[in-house]
Length: 177
Image (cartoon, rainbow, N blue to C red; front, side, top):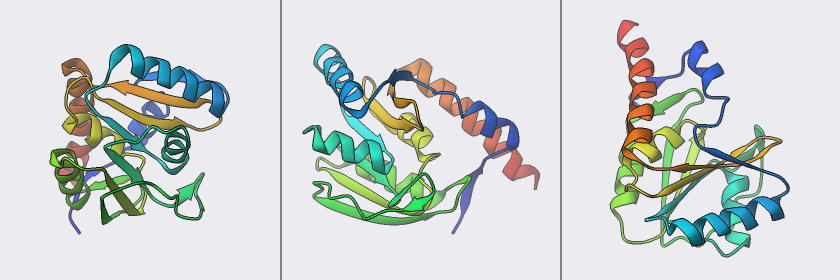
């Protein structure tokens, strides 16, 4: 299993802050506001990263083109969430890393014309960065912000450049070892 990127202590702190728009509130409030954003912006695709946010979207009849889950919530194992997916891909991605396997799976899923669920053995959090980098422009990448709400990242050239910079900082650490 080839590790492409490793999280640094500095980036761990930086990435605790949302990289998109934070929608605060209860599940009901955040989903209503998210649906309003979808109606207004009409995103090219929706990608969800995380079990809770993926489950909440499905329960509100929002079906992402790609859902990335690890069957864990707040580091505790949970029952796999029932998501409508025409294709399921299983990958390994250890905590604090991004593997080549994960990058390939996300790229493949985003090229697909069907709904894909990626099930991660390990941790899916950092895969948000890869989803933003490879998603079509004007897509929404949605992930949970623990105890706060959901974060919606609108994919723009500027956001892709920001994420590429974060990944570059992670890559340099790997090369130095």
